[in-house]
Length: 208
Image 1 (tube, rainbow, N blue to C red):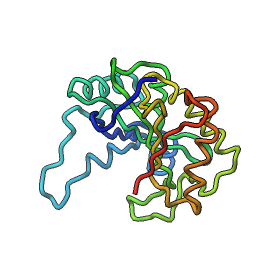
Image 2: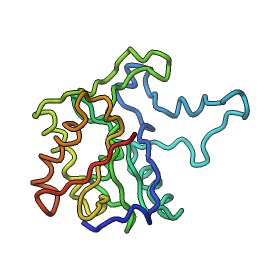
Image 3: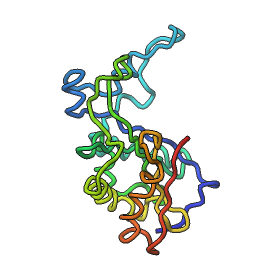
């Protein structure tokens, strides 16, 4: 893996919610994705509703994912910070990750994962207590091991962002865990033996 100097590189956050998944079908109706929210957005009636310049793409289509990577590369970006949704029962909204598992981004283009480690609820509709998917605040070793197993092929990719040869992994909500140190420590303990070039190195960031 090549080193990454984040101070000199330009990354954009990539939100992968723009494709159909069963959870949303059951919660909001068949075919729902975040495009429904985009299409209806009109803060304070300041502008007319309109579609995005690139159209309502479908991230379940590999060609549409490739187009997003190609456009970002042409625009001069060096990589994406990809939001990563992994719940107690496994991944969701993972079409972009499936693409990365099988395909190559543009040459020199990198990515890293930002784990959105919070419950999936109806919060945007004002019903935060209605939970669709849960993230355990104190996952067991088996759960952590399954998550790590899922992450390994991405972090081993030549396109995955590293700092001093350490794969970078961002935890969005460390506050959901009663023990932040354990939340940050557990994944690295399992990853160190299989991903990092040296047995004690792993780079984990948390947002504040």
